[in-house]
Image (cartoon, rainbow, N blue to C red; front, side, top):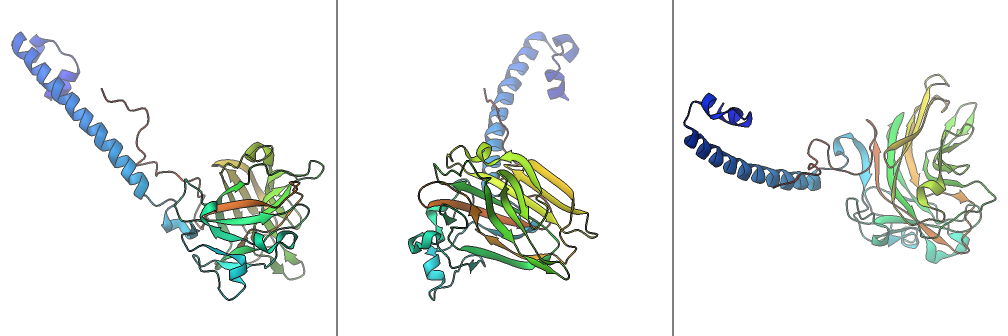
Length: 316
C-alpha cells in the first residue's frame, strides 16, 4: 500500500507523517526503487537473450523434419561413389551436373550456411545457363501426409540473373509426383513461375505478384530470405489449399486447388531444375535451415514472442 501511495504523489498531510520524515522516506524508497528497476531491467534483458538463444526455433513439437545440415562436409561425387549421404535422414537425388562439370555437384558445406540459423552447414546447388542445367539434389522422406508446410532460407550467388526475354522458372523444391488413376502423374513444385513467387504445377499455377527481382535484387545481392509454402490436398477436386510466404509475409493464398484428391505426399526433393539463367558461368544457389511442419506455418527464425527481450528499454 505504501508503494502505491507514493507512486500516486499524495501530499505529506494525507500520508499521516511529518513533512521532514516523509521527505526522507520518499528519498529512500526512490533510490531503492531505481536500484530495483535497474536490476530488474538487467535480469529481464539477460534472461530474454538467454531464452532466445536456448529456445528451439521452430518448436520440434510441431515439426515433421528439420535440418541445419549439422553433418560432415560431403559432395555429390561421394554420394554416388560408395559414400552415401549421411545428414539428418536426407538421401541423394539425381546424379547430374550443370554442363557436365563434375566439379559442380551438390554439396553439404559450411560455405552455404545461413549465419542467422541453427548452425551447422547448408546445401549448395549449382546452376548453369539454359534449361535444366543443374547439379543433383537431396530428398526428404516422411510418412505420407495430406498437408504440410515447408520453410527454407535461400540465396543466390551475387550477380545471379535471368534472361530478360523469358519468364523466370525455378523449381527449388519438388514434392513427390503422385500418380492418380485416370489422370496420370500430378506434380507441384515450390519456387518461381512466370517470374513470380509461387508454385509450378501440371495445370494451375498458384502464384503471387511478388517478383524474383523484388526479393533477391537485379541482379542478386546474395541476401538470404525465408521462403515458405503450404499444401493441403483437396477432398473434392476444388478445395485444396496453396499458400506462400516471403520473409513471413503472406504473398498468395488459393483455396480452390485441384491437387488430385489423393492420399498426400511422402517426400520433397531439395534442388531441382530451372530456366533460363543468363550468367555466362555456373553459379550457386544455397539453402539452409529447412523445416517441414504438419501443424501450421513455421515463419522466419526468431525468438518466441513470450520471451523476446523488450526493445527500446532504457535504464536510468
